[in-house]
Image 1 (cartoon, rainbow over the protein chains, first blue to last red):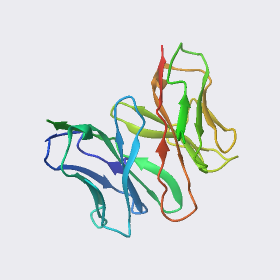
Image 2 (cartoon, each protein chain N blue to C red):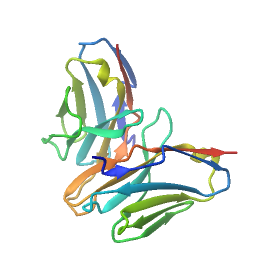
Image 3 (cartoon, helix red, strand yellow):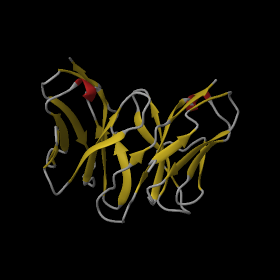
Image 4 (cartoon, each protein chain N blue to C red):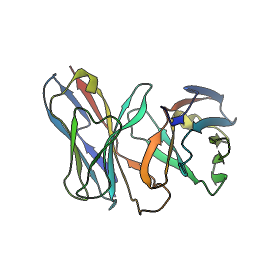
Length: 112
Length: 116
């Protein structure tokens, strides 16, 4: 069973607009959530994280929102730039388990 | 700091051949991981090591072995490569302090493996 789901395989956005990437999880033991960005032929790079004691975390153009009751998190990128075009992975972990569980990723394309 | 380094970057094997993928980190992290990435499958955990001297199976361990050589190095071995092991392999590390929150993992650049 897939404990972390990214239901949109791809998303296309115009430069300057908002990009919203979504992620759902099923395991209520998860209490730490991360977003990674991956360019082709490179390793994933950490982007932003949020713990379950918060519902929002912001870092520059990137904001992650957590809705624990809905078991849903989202990544907002404002404004979107062509350099943001990449695959974005949602990951979750926590409890006594330090491992992370990853979603399958969403390919974001930001068009100039 | 080089972060997490992996060698080789690319390798072609014939079915049945063996090879070892090397990973090293210079961040003094306790935990290290091996993942594989396949199209449409995301990142799947092969093996992990919570600390020096310990290793555990992840989601897809069959056909692989690992060695945590020391705190810095974690290698992944394919004893008899199969075409199904064609993939991109990523090593990662993190500093788990035993708390209730997970720890951020940092990834290497990957090894592309093609098994013919």
